[in-house]
Image (cartoon, rainbow, N blue to C red):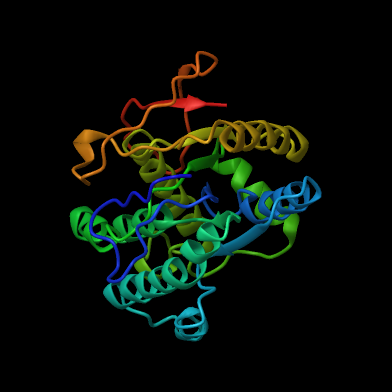
Length: 279
């Protein structure tokens, strides 16, 4: 059983009893392969006999459809957008994620509060304010950050899918460039920087996503098996984050701390040295 641990004050009437399930977050920038890996992981886990639920941004009954409709006009304001996403998150947490965990499900979530924070900060929102909004969040049992090695890899993947550049995923609402390509590169570079900055703060497990799907999938399977078998949370919030959660550190001797391979942003973004656990 895992104790209920939140980054701050939980939602009113939250069931604070320990839960038998596991909350596993898959994070990363747009187009990095999160959905593909979650679908594969669900099939794999169900074949092993586990009950699995999956969720992700804009899927709540309360706000999901509204967010999608509001974004079609390309006129959604920054504050409205963040509160809309926070409403979607709170509804899924209260009505999907926590009940599934209480029932013993392994919950796979395509993004969590971390993507919402990164997107808001890159759009100029106050980092402390955004973090305060998401203090209702349950601390996951594991957070796997699929980290792309370079923006050129991300662009290539996008072109290979044939989807083209999305208005919001390119940051066109805040004018990072004169066209979709330049704006996408600048926006995604800054998202990478924010994710890297949060890696130590929230205890992300970093998995290099520029490799083949098979190799990334194999790493995820091994790591998730360890989380399920150990029964111990793999995530923590550092004391310096000020989020009121004591750090929980996995004592496995097999884990080592590595420095990230450098991201190759264009245009260049000033970066700080970051250290993370990389699988």
